Amino acid sequence: MIVPVYESEKYLDRCVQSILNQTYQDFELILVDDGSPDNSPLLCDKWAENDSRVYVIHKENGGASSARNAGLKIAKGRWIAFADSDDWLDRTALKTLYDLANQYNVPMAIGGMRVVQKYTDASIVMKQNAKVLSNADLMSRFFRLNGEPDTHSVCGAIIRHDILEDYSFIEGRMNEDVETCYYLARKCEAAVYTDAPLYNYFKNIEGVTNSGFSKKKLDLLDIWDIVQKQVEQFTPEYSYACEMNCKRARFTLLTQMSLNGYDHDDSLMKKTKQQLKKEVRQSFWPLMKWKMPISRKVLLVWECIF
Image 1: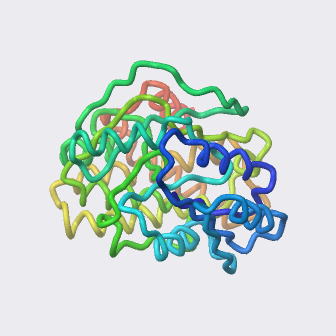
Image 2: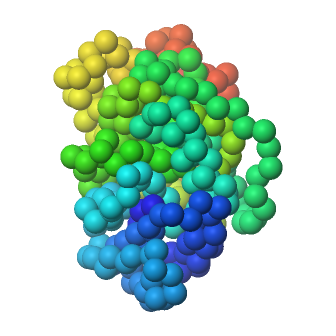
């Protein structure tokens, strides 16, 4: 398990505790201090002192992808998992995913994710529904061909180490998980998915991600451009699906700028919104025909017409 750590002193203990308290205990936990200026580095060292399964890397700040790459370099386990330091796992997460991966003999097991705004340490008690996904299913899920929700996150899954052996996360960008998820969908001949919500994604309503629109979010366009080049090289049969996801990315960013606000005194941001609106309007009918939730299509009409 690899966890990037940056300015996480408020949440790190609950994340680490949820991992160390797993019902499956045979694992290593790699905490990567990404040059955090708060007390997070000290907390990492304290956990390593108290539990032999915990390893700590201290490095200069380079972002979450840089931290994950550093963790991958020293990881020894047959399986790799990732978590963010403000999230936490259900107690049964690793055992459930490990058992499913071995039961179905697949290189990746994916768990359900739930978005939460407050912490609870209660274990989820529910009947899980497991489904084997073929490579075509994984690609369909990634490109949301059937209106699937956004699943572009590497958290909440376990991945066989050899799949990631020669892989590096894109560094210095936001939304880098999009490219990683495409890579995994392309490389895995199959996977197993359970809808049991094993991973808790903490949505901090007071956090910076819920403030005004930031320029860094525009990295999403660069990431999709990178994916598009890879699709043309490796999976050209998904070129149109990729093109539609690039259009959706522009629509997503435009909607975020409208709903969250942005710096109206920044001429670049104003030009960016004008350009996004122009491109989204040009894509209006293809997007309306694409499989998206009705709520998204209502937003699309609002953006383009009203």
